[in-house]
Length: 542
Image (cartoon, rainbow, N blue to C red):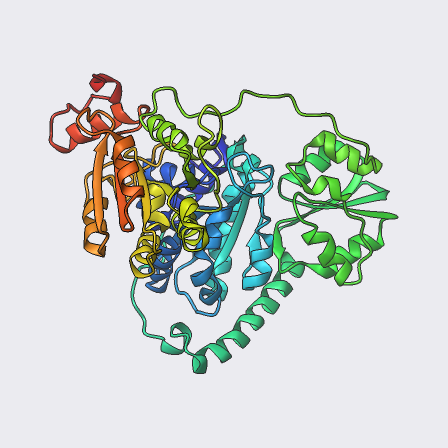
C-alpha cells in the first residue's frame, strides 16, 4: 500500500494509521465527530470495542499500554471531561506501549452541548498534544504520536476537529510496521502506583519529559514554514492553518503540529522576521495567550470570532480587522424526533401531565422542542437523575411531585447507574421517578452498540445488562417495564400513579429505534444462525 493515493476522512486516516502502526486494542465511547475511528478500525481488522463510558475506555487503554501494547482511545471533546480523572494521573505514569488519546473537538457545536477547547487539557494535564490539519497529517501524526509516546513513556493527545474528522483529503500511507511491541508485563511499582511517595518524584519526571519534548520540538518537531511576504506572518494550527493559507497565500506562515509543548524559540525567530504577527486559531485564544506570555508580540482574533468554526471568509475578515456584524447563516430545518419514534408518546404524556422534566443527552433531547416542549434541563451525560433528585429535595411538594428524570439506554449505562445509587441512598421525601427510554441502540451517534444491547462493536453477541434487574437489585421500590405496543397498560396511568407515591420508581419504556430495528433483527438472527453469509440487514426487514 506504500505510495498508494487514498481519499480518506480524518477519522478513517487515524484508523488506518492505527492498523499500520500495530495497535493491538482500540477503546472508546461513540460521540460525533470521533465515532467512525473505531468503526473503521474494526472494519479494517483491528481489535476495537465500545466501553460503557470514556473513563472506562481510558482505564482499559491504560492497562493495555502498561502491558506494552500500542493502544488507541477515542472520544469526543466532552468525553475527555469524563476521562479526565485517569488522564491527569496517567500523565505521571510510565507506559511501555504507545498510548494515543483522541479528543475530537466540535467547534460550532454541530452535535454537542458546548464547544469547549480541549487544548486546555494538554496544559492542565501536562501531556503533549498533536493537531493535524488534514487527513494526511491525521495519518502521519498517529504514527508520530506512538513514537513520542514510546520514546518518553507518556500518553499523547491527538486533537482533531469536526472538519478534519469528516472532510476527505488525499492520504499516502507508509509501509505497515514490521513489528509492534509485544505485550509483556514488567513490574515497575514506583512508575505506576501513584501513592504520594511515588507521585511526587513522578511529577518531577513528568516535567522533565515535557522539557525534553519541547527541546525535540524546537529541533525537529512537526513545524511547516511557508516563506512569503514579510509584512504579514501567520502562526496557525489545525484546520485554521488551511483556511489561513487560502485566505492569505502571499503571507509567511508557520504551521505548528505539536502544539504543546510549543517550539517557542522557532516561533520567536519567525516573529522577528515579519512586521505583523497574527495568530489564526479556532476557539479560545490559547495559542496567542501562550505567545504573549513568552514575550512574543502577537495579534489575535477579535472576540466575536471565538465562537463557531472558522472558514476562509471569516479568516479574511480577521485579517482585515472587520468586526462588523456577520451575515446571518441560512435557516435550516429544525431537528425533531423521528415521526415513527416510539418514544414520542412518552413526551406527549409528560407534556400533558405538566411534568418538570430533567432531561439528558441523546436524540430524545429533542423532546424539548415543539410539539412536545417536555424538557426543562439538559446538562451532560447522566445528569438527568441527579438534577431531578436535586429539584425533588428542595421544591415545594406540589412541584416536587411533578419532577421526572428522563434518560436513554446508552446514556444510562454511560453515567446514569450512579444516579440510581444516589436515589436509593438519598431518596427525596416525595420519592422520585426515573424513565429509561430504551431504544436498543446508541441512536444519536449512528446506532452503535452498548452494554444494554447484548452486542459488541462488531454486533456479535455478548453479555447484556438488564436495567430492570439492576434497578431491583439496587433497591428501587417500584420497577416497571413498558412496551409502546403494550395495549394493556396505560403509560399515562402508570406515571400518574407513581408520581403520587413517596417512593423510588424506575420505568423502562422499551421499543427499538425505528431506524435501527431492521439491523437489530438481522443481528439477532445472525446470532442464532438464521442468516446466510450473503445476507444483509435489508433482507430481513419485516
